Image 1 (cartoon, rainbow over the protein chains, first blue to last red):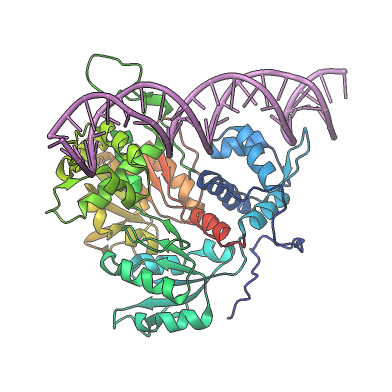
Image 2 (tube, each protein chain N blue to C red):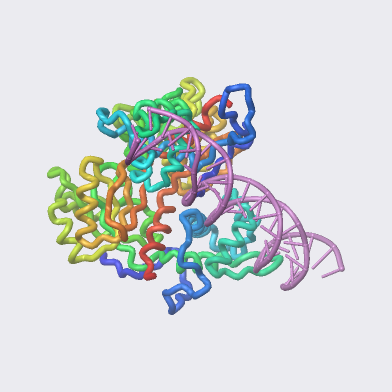
Amino acid sequence: MKQKTTSRTSNGPRKLHSTGSRSRKMPRHVTHTVLERLMHYYVCLSKYDPNIEWISSPHLASQFRVDDTQVRKDLALVGVKGRPNTGFRREQILDSIRRFLGLGRNLDAVIVGVGRLGSALVAYRDFRELGLNIVGLFDNDPRKIGTAVSGHTILPTARMKSFIRRRKPRIAILACPVFVAQILAYELVEAGICAIWNFSPTTLQLPDGVFVRNEHISIGLGEIAYHLLPS
Amino acid sequence: MKQKTTSRTSNGPRKLHSTGSRSRKMPRHVTHTVLERLMHYYVCLSKYDPNIEWISSPHLASQFRVDDTQVRKDLALVGVKGRPNTGFRREQILDSIRRFLGLGRNLDAVIVGVGRLGSALVAYRDFRELGLNIVGLFDNDPRKIGTAVSGHTILPTARMKSFIRRRKPRIAILACPVFVAQILAYELVEAGICAIWNFSPTTLQLPDGVFVRNEHISIGLGEIAYHLLPS
DNA sequence: TAGATTGTTAATCGATTAACAATC
DNA sequence: TAGATTGTTAATCGATTAACAATC
C-alpha cells in the first residue's frame, strides 16, 4: 500500500496542468486569513454533489458567511475566471485552489505521539483525500510500540530521526504530551522536517525557516465562553 | 483563519465596561482575533512556573510572536494594570482574562459522537482545568452505548434531547460523522444548547443566536502545503 | 431585452506598529 | 539618577465592504 507522492483527491478525473509553479500574477505573500478561507472553500466544495457544475459568488458567500465580493477576490487571486450571470465552474475552483495551495504535492508526514488524539489523526479520512500521506507513527510507550493503528506500525521515538532521514517526509504532526513536545520538535527539525503541525498545547521554540502551525484545541473555548456571558 | 461561523447577531454587541461613562474610544465588541490572543496568553501563562510573579510585555510578546504594544493593549482591555519598569503580575493577568472571557462560569458540555476524536476530547486534560465540564456522552453505535469512556457512560442519541432539557448544559461538542452532523446539531439547539463547538468537517446551518465555532482540522493543511511550495 | 452576476476600483473599517511622555 | 517598562496617541498597514460598469 505504497502511495505515490502525487496523489489525486477522490473527486474524479481532471486535467493536470504541467506547470507546478505559480504564475507571475500571483503574490508571493498570502496571509493566513486568505489561506484559511481558500482551504475552507476547497474542503466544502469538494464534498458537493459533483453534478453541481456552476456556483455563484453570492451562493458561496452565504455558505461561508463572508461577503460575495470577498469570494470573487479570493477566486481571482487563485486565477479562477467566472462567467457573468452564471458563476464559476466548481471543478475549476477546486483545481485552482489545489494548485495554488500545493495540495497533493509531496505531502508525506509522520505522526509523533499516538495517544487518543494521535490515533484519531491517523484515521482522519479527509487527510488522505487532501493529499496528506501518513508514512510513519512514533511513540515512546513500550505497550504501543510494535502495535498497529490504521495499518501503520508504531515505532519507538529512538528510531524517528533515522526513519525521517531515510524516508524524507517534510511534515510532522505533533500530538505528544507537552513535556516532550519541545525536545521531539527539535529532533524532528534536526532530521530534516520542514513543517510542524503542533497539536500539543505548548509554544515551540524552533529555528527560523521551520514552519509551525499550532492547533491548540482549547483556544476555541475562550471564544465560546465569552459568547455565553450575559450581555 | 477564519472560517469561524459567528452567528451572534441576535444579542447585539456586548458592553465592555460597566461604568456609566461611554467613551467613544471603547470598542463596542471584541473580535475573534483578540479573543484568541487572550486565550493564548491564558493557556500559556497558566502553565508557567508559579514562582514567576512578574512578566513584562516584551517578554510575553517574544513568547507569542506579537508586538509588545499589542500585548499591553490586550491587557489593558481586560483591565490588568502594570507597573513601569517591572511588568504585569502573572496572577492578575490570569484572573482578569479568566473573568473577561467567562472561563469556569457554568461551562457544562455534552459530547456528541464518541469516535476516536470524541474520546480524545473527553479525556483532554486542559478542558477541566479551564472550567469545561463534560456532563454527558452520546453516540448511536450499539456497540458503544453503555460502555464508559474516561468515567462517562455513553448514552444513545435518542436520549440526547431529554438529557439536555433536564441537565441544561449550554455547550455541545460535535464530533460525529458529517452525514449526521446537521440533524444532530439542530436537535441540540431544539433542546436548548446555546453554543456548538463543531469538530465535524461540515458547515452547519443553524438559527441566529446559536454560537457556532468550527474546528475544522484539515483547514490547517492548506497553510502548511502553501508554505512548503518552492519559492 | 431584463435580470443576475462578474470584475474591479473606491471607501471604510479594523488591526498592527511606531513613537514617546510618564512612571517606577 | 539611569534604564526599563507602561500606557496611550498617531501613523500605517491590511482586510472588508460598497458601488457600479461590463457582461452574458
